[in-house]
Length: 319
Image (cartoon, rainbow, N blue to C red; front, side, top):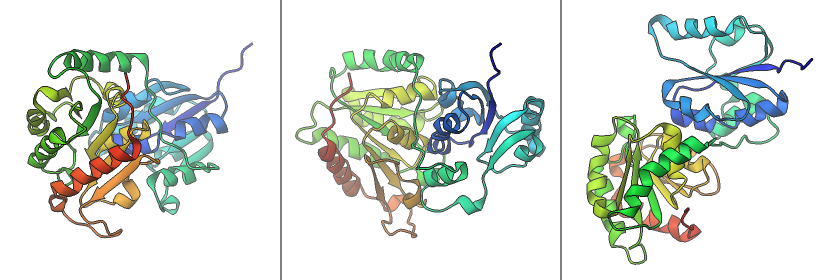
């Protein structure tokens, strides 16, 4: 008789970026509970990130409801299971209300340094838990269906620069006219004349991305709201470089290992910078612990930061 797999519940963050930052928890679960069958509970925007993650057998999408109704709904779906481990990165009361052999629950004592390190401390991991994007064949096919026809048209094929000019937090979004100016300057830069400009974003981001796409002209690739989040990740994985606001897609690009430049205004760039050796930041206020409006970030600084990152890695286009 085959032994039943140990069951693990991972209550993940709500937002895309936070889910990416905590994605290393998936591999750590298997290290601590070998062969675990993992149930992930997360917000709707990030659900696709976990559909092909190793060990994940179920993704429960938490739709926010009044009077904390989403927590009640999650409890109803999980209370009957005897969990080998419950991990709650949101620090809710749910984890204390379930039968669990081991509990890993967020509290402020784990804070300090980068957000990846907070999740690593909470798990008791021996090293930092590297973020990871779990691409699958469907995501790659969907990305190809968006990119391939546009590469074949316009100015033809060429290395792709991915840009994410949108953010779900207004004061983190660099002004749209500056994105357009940046693209125009990059298009005129000697040595970058074969570059294609792929604008990425989710459903509802079309208006915010329109100026960037207009500036790109025939060298533009429109990947805004064309497919789900994992397909957008697969599209970004085709790029030689990524430039974006402080957003979930910035963290996706960094987790994929793409050279990533994050634009920061009044948020903690020293904690939320793109993770990994290929991540860089250009901040409106470059002094750690201080803030400035993102409008203080001028095109010259961003333009030079893009060139510097490109020159540092001279990445090879992904076919």
